[in-house]
Image (cartoon, rainbow, N blue to C red; front, side, top):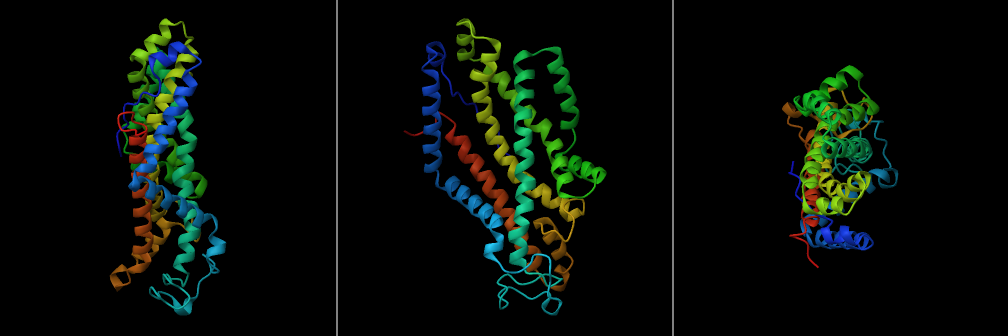
Length: 307
Protein backbone atom coordinates (compact mmCIF):
# COMPACT_ATOMS: atom_id res chain seq x y z
CA UNK A 1 0.00 0.00 0.00
CA UNK A 2 1.21 3.46 -0.77
CA UNK A 3 1.81 6.08 1.86
CA UNK A 4 -0.38 9.18 1.82
CA UNK A 5 1.31 12.27 0.50
CA UNK A 6 1.44 15.73 2.04
CA UNK A 7 -0.98 17.88 0.05
CA UNK A 8 -2.02 21.50 0.44
CA UNK A 9 -5.20 22.33 -1.43
CA UNK A 10 -5.63 25.67 0.32
CA UNK A 11 -3.22 28.54 0.83
CA UNK A 12 -3.11 31.21 3.58
CA UNK A 13 -3.93 33.91 1.07
CA UNK A 14 -6.98 32.00 -0.07
CA UNK A 15 -8.12 31.60 3.52
CA UNK A 16 -7.79 35.29 4.34
CA UNK A 17 -9.49 36.45 1.18
CA UNK A 18 -12.47 34.24 1.93
CA UNK A 19 -14.52 34.54 -1.28
CA UNK A 20 -11.56 33.63 -3.47
CA UNK A 21 -11.00 30.31 -1.67
CA UNK A 22 -13.62 28.19 -3.47
CA UNK A 23 -12.32 29.28 -6.87
CA UNK A 24 -8.74 28.38 -5.90
CA UNK A 25 -9.90 24.98 -4.65
CA UNK A 26 -11.76 24.22 -7.87
CA UNK A 27 -8.76 25.14 -10.01
CA UNK A 28 -6.59 22.87 -7.86
CA UNK A 29 -8.85 19.90 -8.53
CA UNK A 30 -8.88 20.71 -12.26
CA UNK A 31 -5.10 20.72 -12.28
CA UNK A 32 -5.17 17.37 -10.50
CA UNK A 33 -7.52 15.87 -13.08
CA UNK A 34 -5.33 17.15 -15.91
CA UNK A 35 -2.23 15.66 -14.26
CA UNK A 36 -3.98 12.32 -13.76
CA UNK A 37 -5.03 12.16 -17.42
CA UNK A 38 -1.42 12.74 -18.46
CA UNK A 39 -0.32 9.72 -16.43
CA UNK A 40 -0.80 7.04 -19.10
CA UNK A 41 -0.36 4.10 -16.73
CA UNK A 42 -2.92 5.40 -14.23
CA UNK A 43 -5.33 6.40 -16.99
CA UNK A 44 -5.14 2.98 -18.66
CA UNK A 45 -5.64 1.32 -15.26
CA UNK A 46 -8.71 3.47 -14.58
CA UNK A 47 -10.16 2.61 -17.99
CA UNK A 48 -9.48 -1.08 -17.33
CA UNK A 49 -11.36 -0.93 -14.01
CA UNK A 50 -14.28 0.84 -15.66
CA UNK A 51 -14.43 -1.84 -18.34
CA UNK A 52 -14.32 -4.60 -15.71
CA UNK A 53 -17.17 -2.94 -13.81
CA UNK A 54 -19.23 -2.49 -16.98
CA UNK A 55 -18.63 -6.11 -17.96
CA UNK A 56 -19.90 -7.25 -14.57
CA UNK A 57 -22.95 -4.99 -14.71
CA UNK A 58 -23.92 -6.02 -18.24
CA UNK A 59 -22.95 -9.68 -17.84
CA UNK A 60 -26.33 -10.96 -19.16
CA UNK A 61 -25.68 -9.12 -22.43
CA UNK A 62 -22.17 -10.52 -22.82
CA UNK A 63 -22.88 -14.20 -22.22
CA UNK A 64 -25.84 -16.50 -22.71
CA UNK A 65 -24.65 -19.16 -20.27
CA UNK A 66 -25.81 -19.46 -16.69
CA UNK A 67 -23.04 -18.97 -14.10
CA UNK A 68 -24.61 -21.70 -11.96
CA UNK A 69 -25.96 -24.38 -14.32
CA UNK A 70 -23.34 -26.77 -15.66
CA UNK A 71 -22.76 -29.28 -18.44
CA UNK A 72 -21.38 -32.43 -16.74
CA UNK A 73 -20.63 -34.08 -20.07
CA UNK A 74 -18.04 -31.43 -21.01
CA UNK A 75 -16.68 -30.74 -17.52
CA UNK A 76 -13.05 -29.59 -17.32
CA UNK A 77 -13.02 -28.67 -21.02
CA UNK A 78 -10.03 -26.46 -21.78
CA UNK A 79 -9.60 -22.98 -23.18
CA UNK A 80 -10.87 -22.59 -26.73
CA UNK A 81 -13.63 -25.18 -26.42
CA UNK A 82 -16.33 -24.48 -28.99
CA UNK A 83 -18.87 -22.13 -27.46
CA UNK A 84 -16.78 -21.72 -24.31
CA UNK A 85 -13.80 -19.49 -25.03
CA UNK A 86 -12.31 -19.87 -21.53
CA UNK A 87 -13.40 -23.48 -21.03
CA UNK A 88 -15.51 -25.06 -18.30
CA UNK A 89 -14.88 -25.84 -14.64
CA UNK A 90 -15.18 -29.09 -12.70
CA UNK A 91 -18.98 -28.96 -12.76
CA UNK A 92 -19.23 -28.02 -16.42
CA UNK A 93 -19.99 -24.35 -15.81
CA UNK A 94 -18.81 -21.74 -18.29
CA UNK A 95 -15.78 -19.96 -16.84
CA UNK A 96 -16.31 -16.72 -18.77
CA UNK A 97 -19.88 -16.50 -17.49
CA UNK A 98 -18.76 -17.09 -13.91
CA UNK A 99 -16.02 -14.48 -14.28
CA UNK A 100 -18.48 -11.86 -15.46
CA UNK A 101 -21.13 -12.56 -12.84
CA UNK A 102 -18.50 -13.14 -10.15
CA UNK A 103 -17.10 -9.69 -10.80
CA UNK A 104 -20.28 -8.21 -9.33
CA UNK A 105 -19.71 -9.77 -5.92
CA UNK A 106 -15.93 -9.33 -5.93
CA UNK A 107 -16.09 -5.63 -6.82
CA UNK A 108 -18.93 -4.96 -4.38
CA UNK A 109 -17.01 -6.58 -1.53
CA UNK A 110 -13.93 -4.54 -2.41
CA UNK A 111 -15.50 -1.12 -2.98
CA UNK A 112 -18.64 -0.86 -0.80
CA UNK A 113 -16.89 -1.33 2.59
CA UNK A 114 -14.28 1.28 1.66
CA UNK A 115 -16.97 3.78 0.62
CA UNK A 116 -18.98 3.19 3.80
CA UNK A 117 -15.99 3.44 6.14
CA UNK A 118 -14.55 6.51 4.36
CA UNK A 119 -16.79 9.21 5.96
CA UNK A 120 -16.66 7.50 9.36
CA UNK A 121 -12.85 7.37 9.29
CA UNK A 122 -12.73 11.00 8.15
CA UNK A 123 -14.90 12.17 11.05
CA UNK A 124 -12.88 10.15 13.56
CA UNK A 125 -9.62 11.51 12.21
CA UNK A 126 -10.81 15.13 12.18
CA UNK A 127 -12.29 14.91 15.68
CA UNK A 128 -9.33 13.17 17.30
CA UNK A 129 -6.65 14.96 15.30
CA UNK A 130 -7.88 18.52 15.62
CA UNK A 131 -9.48 18.59 19.05
CA UNK A 132 -6.71 16.49 20.67
CA UNK A 133 -9.09 15.95 23.59
CA UNK A 134 -9.06 13.06 26.04
CA UNK A 135 -12.10 11.53 24.31
CA UNK A 136 -10.30 11.62 20.97
CA UNK A 137 -7.18 10.05 22.44
CA UNK A 138 -9.21 7.27 24.07
CA UNK A 139 -10.96 6.62 20.76
CA UNK A 140 -7.65 6.35 18.91
CA UNK A 141 -6.21 4.02 21.56
CA UNK A 142 -9.23 1.72 21.17
CA UNK A 143 -8.68 1.69 17.41
CA UNK A 144 -4.99 0.98 17.99
CA UNK A 145 -5.98 -2.25 19.71
CA UNK A 146 -7.73 -3.35 16.53
CA UNK A 147 -4.87 -1.95 14.48
CA UNK A 148 -2.52 -4.36 16.28
CA UNK A 149 -4.20 -7.35 14.63
CA UNK A 150 -3.23 -8.21 11.03
CA UNK A 151 -6.01 -7.10 8.69
CA UNK A 152 -6.43 -10.49 7.03
CA UNK A 153 -6.46 -12.38 10.33
CA UNK A 154 -9.07 -10.04 11.80
CA UNK A 155 -11.24 -10.32 8.68
CA UNK A 156 -11.07 -14.13 8.81
CA UNK A 157 -11.97 -14.15 12.51
CA UNK A 158 -14.96 -11.84 12.05
CA UNK A 159 -16.19 -13.75 9.00
CA UNK A 160 -15.93 -17.03 10.91
CA UNK A 161 -18.00 -15.58 13.76
CA UNK A 162 -20.61 -13.87 11.58
CA UNK A 163 -20.82 -16.71 9.06
CA UNK A 164 -20.44 -16.89 5.32
CA UNK A 165 -22.42 -14.66 2.98
CA UNK A 166 -21.95 -11.51 0.94
CA UNK A 167 -23.37 -9.16 3.59
CA UNK A 168 -21.31 -10.65 6.41
CA UNK A 169 -18.14 -10.49 4.33
CA UNK A 170 -18.67 -6.80 3.62
CA UNK A 171 -19.39 -6.15 7.31
CA UNK A 172 -16.24 -8.01 8.36
CA UNK A 173 -14.07 -6.15 5.88
CA UNK A 174 -15.65 -2.82 6.83
CA UNK A 175 -14.89 -3.32 10.52
CA UNK A 176 -11.27 -4.26 9.79
CA UNK A 177 -10.82 -1.13 7.66
CA UNK A 178 -11.94 1.36 10.31
CA UNK A 179 -8.68 1.50 12.33
CA UNK A 180 -6.51 1.66 9.20
CA UNK A 181 -8.40 4.46 7.49
CA UNK A 182 -9.02 6.37 10.72
CA UNK A 183 -5.30 6.29 11.50
CA UNK A 184 -4.48 7.81 8.11
CA UNK A 185 -7.13 10.52 8.59
CA UNK A 186 -5.86 11.22 12.12
CA UNK A 187 -2.22 11.51 11.02
CA UNK A 188 -3.14 13.77 8.11
CA UNK A 189 -5.23 15.99 10.39
CA UNK A 190 -2.42 16.38 12.93
CA UNK A 191 0.03 17.28 10.15
CA UNK A 192 -2.28 19.79 8.48
CA UNK A 193 -3.41 21.41 11.75
CA UNK A 194 0.09 22.69 12.41
CA UNK A 195 0.53 24.41 9.03
CA UNK A 196 0.52 28.11 8.27
CA UNK A 197 -2.80 28.28 6.46
CA UNK A 198 -4.60 26.91 9.53
CA UNK A 199 -2.82 29.44 11.73
CA UNK A 200 -3.80 32.20 9.30
CA UNK A 201 -7.44 31.10 9.34
CA UNK A 202 -7.41 30.90 13.15
CA UNK A 203 -5.89 34.38 13.40
CA UNK A 204 -8.56 35.64 11.00
CA UNK A 205 -11.16 34.48 13.53
CA UNK A 206 -12.44 31.34 11.79
CA UNK A 207 -14.82 29.14 13.81
CA UNK A 208 -13.44 25.71 14.86
CA UNK A 209 -16.12 24.02 12.76
CA UNK A 210 -15.06 26.07 9.76
CA UNK A 211 -11.43 25.13 10.37
CA UNK A 212 -12.24 21.43 10.56
CA UNK A 213 -14.63 21.05 7.66
CA UNK A 214 -13.65 23.88 5.29
CA UNK A 215 -9.89 24.12 5.81
CA UNK A 216 -8.66 20.78 7.12
CA UNK A 217 -11.16 18.41 5.51
CA UNK A 218 -10.22 19.04 1.83
CA UNK A 219 -6.56 18.20 2.50
CA UNK A 220 -7.37 15.20 4.69
CA UNK A 221 -9.88 13.90 2.13
CA UNK A 222 -7.27 14.15 -0.62
CA UNK A 223 -4.83 11.96 1.32
CA UNK A 224 -7.56 9.55 2.39
CA UNK A 225 -8.72 9.10 -1.22
CA UNK A 226 -5.25 7.93 -2.22
CA UNK A 227 -5.14 5.41 0.62
CA UNK A 228 -8.71 4.22 0.05
CA UNK A 229 -8.04 3.56 -3.64
CA UNK A 230 -5.10 1.29 -2.86
CA UNK A 231 -7.19 -0.41 -0.16
CA UNK A 232 -9.75 -1.40 -2.81
CA UNK A 233 -7.04 -3.43 -4.53
CA UNK A 234 -6.12 -5.10 -1.26
CA UNK A 235 -9.77 -5.85 -0.47
CA UNK A 236 -10.11 -7.67 -3.80
CA UNK A 237 -7.42 -10.07 -2.61
CA UNK A 238 -8.79 -10.31 0.95
CA UNK A 239 -12.35 -11.02 -0.26
CA UNK A 240 -11.05 -13.67 -2.66
CA UNK A 241 -9.06 -15.22 0.18
CA UNK A 242 -12.11 -15.38 2.43
CA UNK A 243 -14.10 -17.11 -0.31
CA UNK A 244 -11.17 -19.43 -0.95
CA UNK A 245 -11.20 -20.44 2.73
CA UNK A 246 -14.96 -20.99 2.71
CA UNK A 247 -15.91 -18.05 4.96
CA UNK A 248 -16.79 -15.66 2.15
CA UNK A 249 -19.46 -15.75 -0.53
CA UNK A 250 -21.50 -18.95 -0.35
CA UNK A 251 -21.28 -21.36 -3.34
CA UNK A 252 -22.64 -21.80 -5.95
CA UNK A 253 -22.80 -17.99 -6.14
CA UNK A 254 -20.07 -16.99 -8.62
CA UNK A 255 -17.07 -15.30 -7.04
CA UNK A 256 -13.46 -15.03 -8.14
CA UNK A 257 -12.19 -16.48 -4.87
CA UNK A 258 -14.57 -19.45 -5.08
CA UNK A 259 -13.50 -20.06 -8.68
CA UNK A 260 -9.86 -20.14 -7.63
CA UNK A 261 -10.70 -22.53 -4.80
CA UNK A 262 -12.62 -24.83 -7.16
CA UNK A 263 -9.71 -24.89 -9.59
CA UNK A 264 -7.11 -25.66 -6.93
CA UNK A 265 -8.54 -29.17 -6.49
CA UNK A 266 -7.57 -30.19 -10.04
CA UNK A 267 -4.18 -28.50 -10.28
CA UNK A 268 -2.36 -31.76 -9.53
CA UNK A 269 -4.20 -33.35 -12.45
CA UNK A 270 -2.57 -30.87 -14.83
CA UNK A 271 -5.71 -28.77 -15.32
CA UNK A 272 -4.58 -25.21 -14.70
CA UNK A 273 -7.02 -22.89 -16.45
CA UNK A 274 -9.82 -23.19 -13.87
CA UNK A 275 -7.74 -21.65 -11.07
CA UNK A 276 -5.31 -19.62 -13.18
CA UNK A 277 -7.85 -17.48 -15.07
CA UNK A 278 -9.69 -16.06 -12.02
CA UNK A 279 -6.34 -15.76 -10.22
CA UNK A 280 -4.97 -13.58 -13.02
CA UNK A 281 -8.13 -11.46 -13.01
CA UNK A 282 -7.72 -10.87 -9.26
CA UNK A 283 -4.07 -9.94 -9.82
CA UNK A 284 -4.75 -7.48 -12.64
CA UNK A 285 -7.72 -5.80 -10.93
CA UNK A 286 -5.81 -5.40 -7.65
CA UNK A 287 -2.80 -4.04 -9.54
CA UNK A 288 -5.02 -1.60 -11.45
CA UNK A 289 -6.44 -0.20 -8.21
CA UNK A 290 -2.92 0.36 -6.89
CA UNK A 291 -1.80 2.07 -10.10
CA UNK A 292 -4.85 4.33 -10.03
CA UNK A 293 -4.00 5.17 -6.42
CA UNK A 294 -0.46 6.11 -7.49
CA UNK A 295 -1.90 8.33 -10.22
CA UNK A 296 -4.26 10.05 -7.79
CA UNK A 297 -1.40 10.61 -5.36
CA UNK A 298 0.66 12.35 -8.03
CA UNK A 299 -2.35 14.26 -9.34
CA UNK A 300 -3.10 15.73 -5.91
CA UNK A 301 0.51 16.67 -5.25
CA UNK A 302 0.96 20.37 -6.22
CA UNK A 303 4.63 19.74 -6.93
CA UNK A 304 3.74 17.29 -9.71
CA UNK A 305 0.70 19.03 -11.17
CA UNK A 306 0.98 20.33 -14.73
CA UNK A 307 -0.94 23.22 -16.19
